[in-house]
Image 1: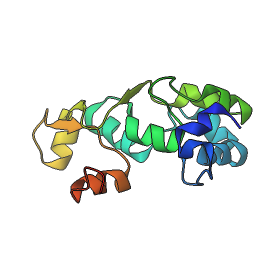
Image 2: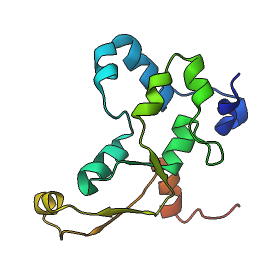
Image 3: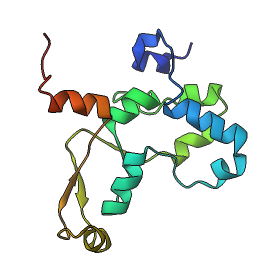
Image 4: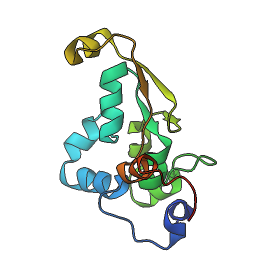
Length: 142
């Protein structure tokens, strides 16, 4: 297998159908025009943050868990190539932010729509199961 598969599950698999690569491969094969015309292909969270702040960025947590992203080596370009998804790398957010990092402040339009203050801090989140563990206080082994 490709070295990028070791990022999630130590290469033991399986790759879940909910992760970015299977969904993107399906989109390319079944809805090629949509895939080709998309400026961004990202997680819902990236899309929401973009509309809240005007900044397109990915979560290190989501990218690592679901995209085979490595903080050391970046996006899994060799794996994308093996899958015929070379174009996907150009559609992913250029920035990858760690949990809790400042994405930006609410834009005027987002603030008005939500009834909140313009400039309100939007922080980077992550995958629901991982963030839920933190919320439950599961912060150390045992």
